[in-house]
Image 1: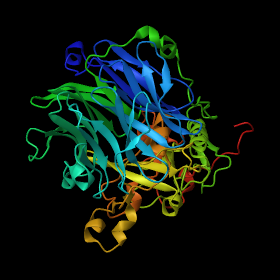
Image 2: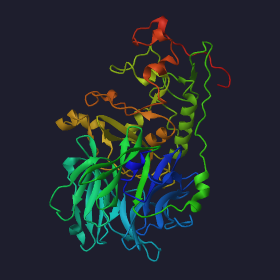
Image 3: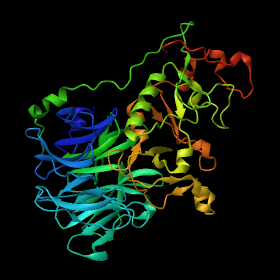
Image 4: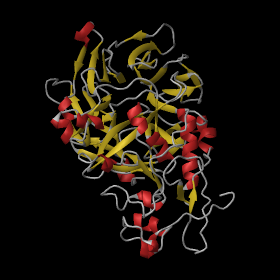
Length: 529
């Protein structure tokens, strides 16, 4: 947590975050000056994309039910939640009209994300706002009431567009962000409607841009690093900063720069809302706030006869060249395999490219000190990527490139997964004759794939598995991208993890030659292990 002095610069009375917690995402309230992360929701379902009503008394959000995703309305005064939609489509990312009477939101029936408007009291049928065959999502209703900002892929990469409700047809829509600044996301209006902020990745660096509606012809300017902005006042905003294996909160005063040091967050952010005057009603959420989640897995590792190291133990029912992991990691793998199978509807981790790799079985060049040697890592197979059952989203977190892996849900009726909100990275584009794609190691896909997908990376991180950065030469050497590898590092260095299963003299330089002195043969499995 920040110091009290730093926290005074946080631009809001109350923040609500949707955070991945184990198998499910839940809503948490937070205030740097008055409230640590406090649970608002619980249960075996996901809660995402919260949005405060203009008066700060209600919270609209999306939650999964048996048939799919619906919008709900939560009263902060008494903690009651009522459904706003009840259909088999995906409904999420609500944003309120300034009078609190209407909501604009994402709607998808499995083919394409579009924007709809509906009254908050459900008094009439929804009104469709966008009809583009591209993906339109992440709406933000302007405080003046007549414009809605949103993200669209209608011109290729995701960019920020403005919908003028007083216009019709093609004249209604105007692009605000510049494609040369990279993919854009998460627009947010200042309270007076003069400024619009959004996140955009320029030259591999995720930045917060601010556009001034009083000078619409001027390009938006970058004010600092970030990914998801929310305004607290006209001159201060908060932002989520994405980290390699987590996230953090910060704040900016656009005219003065950084206003708050990073506040680490405990999980992947699935939603972010801020209200400058809303207050937390402690009694309304006392039951949810008291809940302590059950750990997703419990370690059961035992030192072997040396008294200093762990054995490598078998992975049952997994197709992989060496079906073994360190005894310190097998329970974590089993838990992730079970969660992913339940979320996606198929055994995502039943076949792997690699798990534990013996030192006598060398990996490709450049991977001599890879985590697969430690018994604390696994690599997903690449076959689902080429078969359309997996996509990879590029995430640049300076100075490295990381990847977010999604797998296609078996059930495409909305009961599993959710729509994609980003263009995947196409590694195969480097082989298509385009010199730019060749030099960049691929290119963004031409469109967001339809259907419902499961975020493997978010679930893996929630259970302790970390993604690894691409090596510097990944653009010319695809194995160096390491998009499919996850490691259970638990704060260990590679050398420390190696010492858990190898004697010290075996570690310095893995050799491609079969040397008996450093060969480690998995022991005969002990019954029950």
